[in-house]
Length: 269
Length: 103
Image (cartoon, rainbow over the protein chains, first blue to last red):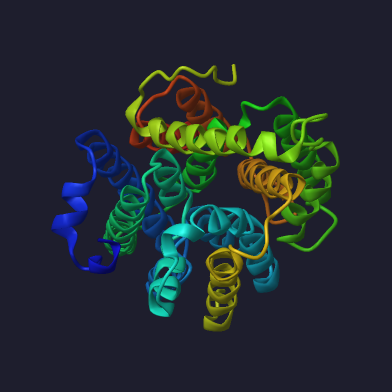
């Protein structure tokens, strides 16, 4: 019975899910551990105090926005520009929250704690399951495992980053855009998204000499004018399942950056 | 640098985005148009961060070594190289170019 479900009953969570799902969750954790360690190391070697990447990981718990905010600050940008960039990035979690809302139905504390565990990854694993009991198990297992793995790996990376001396001689300033590029490439398969992103990038680079640091990235949002409409000519209700399936595929492809495994969908060439 | 209030602002705003669905899920649905725009906005910002992070330093050009490293990383990522290899190869390319005197 669902009433018997408790947050800490990990053994029943493990038994509820299929072996393949458990393996996928473990692989996603491994990939995120590497990203987290990079985040900790890059933040601290870039000059931020140890507590910043650690606090961001525990409180914000969204890798892309953490990299973005730290990137804006390390490039000399204003604090508010860093926060605004992170928030626009995390606005994508809003639809994910609606997607997994049924999983968090019930007590208040479950909603409050569960909300913090909503990420691209947990949403994708929930979408793969149709049975309510498995949706819950996938959400909590993936969410808790990722939260622990992410924070531990960021801590280890941050400590290691503090031991690095001359970061420019080691090319670590290239590591930050390299990580982001590896993360974003799989979401650029859609032509309109690609157009919007290229227009935005050109605007951002062109604006850099003239506006305060941090602002160029936000100006890139004019690229959204080229975003087009979702599934033109179709009823929204008919589009939703397709959109959700695309979300799953996108996250799976993001994670496969780590595995070097061919997928059915074509990539950008 | 990055004061505590900035971390808290980002954390509270992000939590609000996450909590809206579980709190309002039964009573409200997001339009397909908004979902699409939010997804594209995330990609646009990330690519802009890659471009400015690779090419610029302060208000000027970052020099050739850094974008060359990022380019190597991008090619490896497209070829589905493992994540650590992508990052290490990018940084190593930049470091080697600097060792050879490229700015």
